[in-house]
Length: 296
Image 1 (cartoon, rainbow, N blue to C red):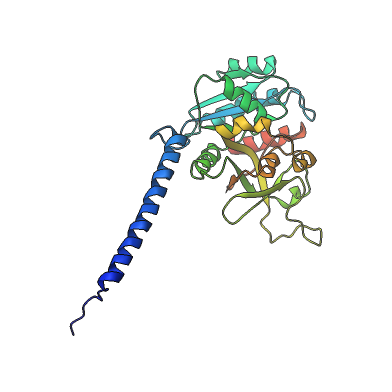
Image 2: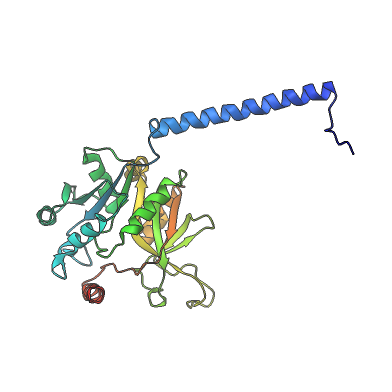
């Protein structure tokens, strides 16, 4: 059987051809506009958000644990333990400590860390990171805020949130979560997080979220614990201090809520990590016991 393609009449062919040219023109224009936008943002052909600095904000005057960065963890200051872990990251071009305290600065210089002095007026770690960023001589695309009270932070998590932000141009912020232990469900020092189906943050809370009608922990629900580490696009970080405080941020005392309340997107990665932050003096013994287990 002879099968031949159907042929349109010349009039319909001309109409189809015109429509095709119109569609192609629209697509071409869109590609050009997108390309120009990308070129403007990236400053040429350089890789998206490629230059990354890790900043460890540290202050002496903590209300719950004064002098916390200098507390000894198996013979080394906690800030040194955190700095050494951060230096193992493969995505960080540079690591610095940002502090307003000369005792912390002297300690950090003693073990080889670069230090940026910041003002006492910084209201949180994000603002301290922003001030330190302005004082750095090099220009960076991404800042990673590495909590100084996480002496066992895994370098792979640092790399993970950096790569997540690089892969999500619609986000200005990235962070990490892990499984929440049932015993931490109602601990206000353990911040919980809920995430949408595309991996973007919906909300953070010191209370248990989601919260069911029974008021009890559901052993079958995968609750998420927020890990303190986070990264920002530097253009957004420069805007952050000028954003007014928001009601949810003030009520929960969580700086990341100001990002969400102002309509910005935050990428979240899920990791398998045993969270071991130092929030109070009694946490030091727990950290040291865990480190001894790993060393033995």
